[in-house]
Image (cartoon, rainbow, N blue to C red; front, top):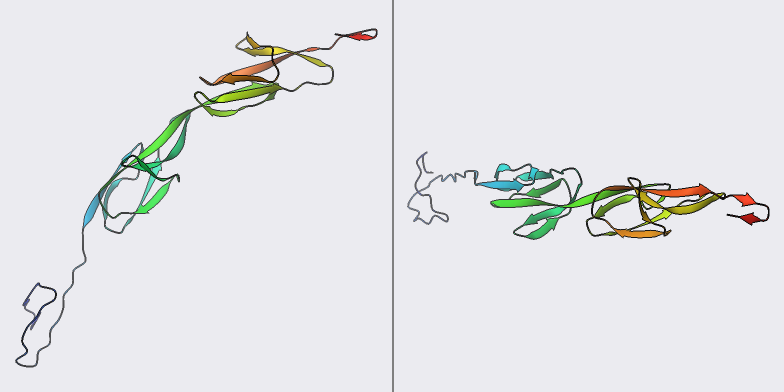
Length: 171
């Protein structure tokens, strides 16, 4: 500006000096905005360039968070995840289905993906004999430890019985 009037919007501005002048440069803050679209979570919206955006995955029952993908490529395994907005972006929460195995009378409980192998082991007292494994009262195996492929959430029970001693013999 010269005398309050804009003389050019070019940068750089070149001119010939013919007298003493006071030149004032005027700058404007960039208001470039971008859209963050979140699939499978929250935190999207419109952001100015350089702003921080925090996204949080929405998890359903029996799911576990895996990571955040942009264009099919994982960019973070953190949830929530904060990043600087530099352009329009669609970010997708990637989850996997998990199943819960609950072991009654032994070890091996946990969360498993479909198709994972689970190994359960009965815990026996000194005066007990292992009989087998049941699910909803239906025998699954007589092996201890017992290994199976997880296809759903399940409660598996170790069935034992008391050891009986008759004279010098134990049954």
